[in-house]
Image (cartoon, rainbow, N blue to C red; front, side):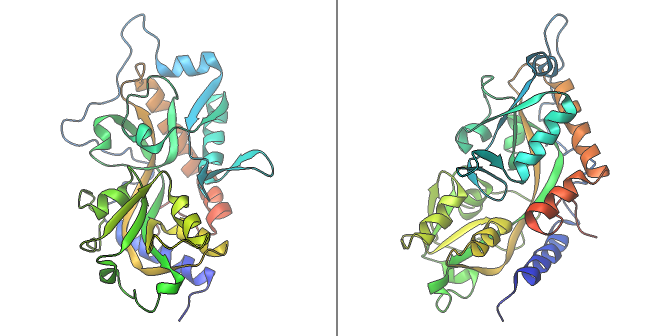
Length: 301
């Protein structure tokens, strides 16, 4: 039976509860660094801390994606940034007492660290992984997501299970957990379904390009692996794609700060405190409801 939008959202929420209740971090608890990971660095005497630099500048420079709806995108009609991550970033900046500026580097440049001061923070739906914690510091998760396969609608009769993707071409954004999962490199406690074998992985710059390519009528991709809410957003906007199976893993998503930036201990602490407050006062819940129609800001009970 074809799921309606409401029932699909309920299904996603239920799956999220099952997948991450036992292992995901509490929204109010900072993500634990892996053994041997460096902690945020305190400023030596006389050296400015990143928090002080941002406040003196009066602007928080945030890396984001201009084509990742409904998390973040630049609306060419209104000439405005919009999305869940965008509104989250604006609220973080407001609570810091500064303005916000959005910068759009390639995703692999963000996840690799060594930002060289080009931006201060990533508020861009980044999954906390042990590999990334080697070069980035993370706040507590500000929301949770599910990794979901979507297939071209014209293939629904031939691709009925995730195992049927063997030998097929799956589009993903490069330097993402989705690419690592398909390549057998992802280490998360919340993986519930093994990756299909012999998949042809087709990495592109951002997830939405996968869906937009399919929507344009081109058929070089048989499927896409991205966040469930991105697949749902594409379906609601008329893309000829369909959900395939259940979500395959869940992700705690957090704000990231470069370890190699100016000493950042105060900055990480301040941003983490803001995220905790935004959970407590319901701000993140309201933003999730606004953009997704269901609450991804907390682990469902």
